[in-house]
Length: 483
Image (cartoon, rainbow, N blue to C red; front, side, top):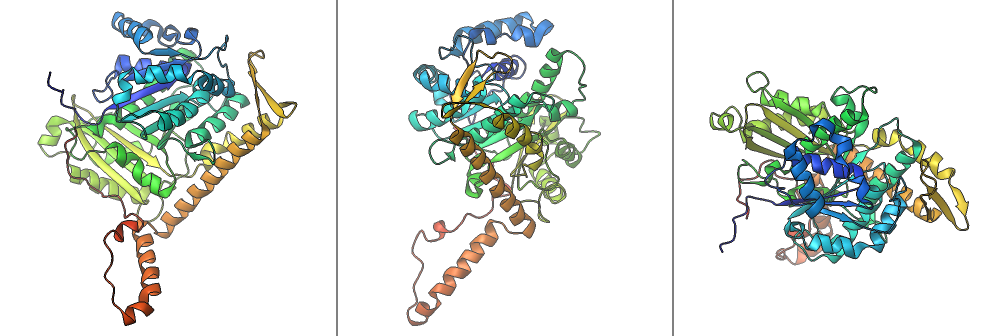
């Protein structure tokens, strides 16, 4: 049988924990990109947590029910042996994943995920199962699974509401940091870490504090799913300029800063709102609290009706021009950050969607609402021998031990990463970027070589240029075919 031609970059998703399970099920039921298909695996420590009836209520149509039954039968892995699950204790989620990693590995290996080019890991950061297990699982899969996606892991962490208890913000700080760094020496874990803050998204969609939690989280999750759907959009042949997996993480890797947040404007009327205005609407709607003009990197993605691409209303050049203008207005420095990519792709329907992934922004506003809660919760933990006791405030029988040194290490990783982020912002504001770094390095090398060059001229060796720091990302990539 002839091998099926690939449509483009193939994505997969691992959703760990109750909150992430709901988002993954909702994504499959309502969106489902051909680039993601059904390459999805739900992970949990207890089957009773996979209860979409609570989340979707009357929206559970017969078609939805059919999808749900398939997911439960074919795409769900229950791991660990904790009788009550992990509750709000992230350490239990991590320990159960470690004890039963072979089960997780086997499910992963036997699924279509093993053939994916990139895996999107999804967890709500306030809880225990996903928040605890996902950082561990990513680190293990990267090191122990010989797959196409061995080094391509992007994480999406959902920050808890501002009004939620201190324990959930303690969990969020620990989970976010462990998605960034993990293991001995604090090695980089995810290639990219995306953040969506529930309170920020609730404000964007105009949700009030009152009203059924079921409806609130359904609508919040729907906005987050839109960002997931847009992220995979530039993966295929319909894009004027593709954004491949490597494009998402190679340049952030060179900076050592790799956190992003989605900014979206959805279903804009192209006869009323122009391309630049639609992108600006997105930039004014970040899913994470951030300080103005601190972002240092951006991916501009627009999905427009095919007919509007054919008649020239939307063009790749027009998007690049809009990105240049808006970057100087919304990003750090007079030149608008250090790196930007643009991709225009087609869609069905009449409206156009715009997403900007803003990255490398200051974490001060995000952490301002959580670090105090993290510190107070940590300081109030009960000591038992040489360890601290983590327990679920709502279910005290769910508990685990953690060494004080581990919490200090996590806090140190986050502090160091935040400092590196601020240094990158300062560089962007000074106008320094990869071009300037390369020029300065070249001048230093030339100055060192000058005395020797006076007596003996030496041609550069092949490969010398590759050792210099990388230049800036191209503003436009030629259209290419994947597969």
